Length: 97
Image 1 (cartoon, rainbow, N blue to C red):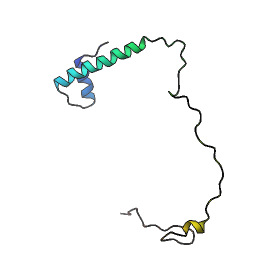
Image 2: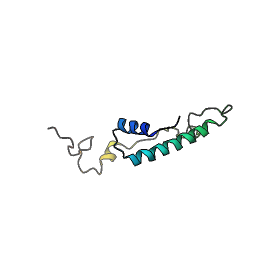
Image 3: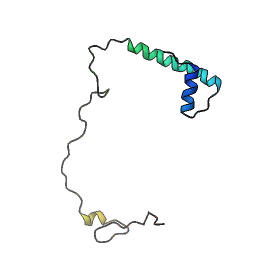
Image 4: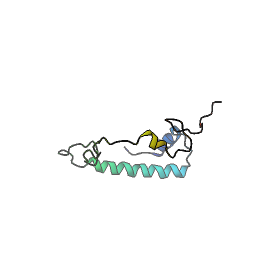
């Protein structure tokens, strides 16, 4: 079913777009070209083609989690400009108006 100019104007109204007569005619042609292409795709024989959940068939590409020792609190705070016994001190960034 081809798209007519009235359809384009209705879609533009729903999308709250103001289009000119020239744009409506241009979009009508473009939408009909798109629909013709999709119709060509419908002609393809996909009888023996399995559906894909993703276009690229990658296996899990994540690395394994490995437990590693962490830096201790004293070394982490060693170069901090402002700190207390176990925490970094930072300026307040949230207003409480």
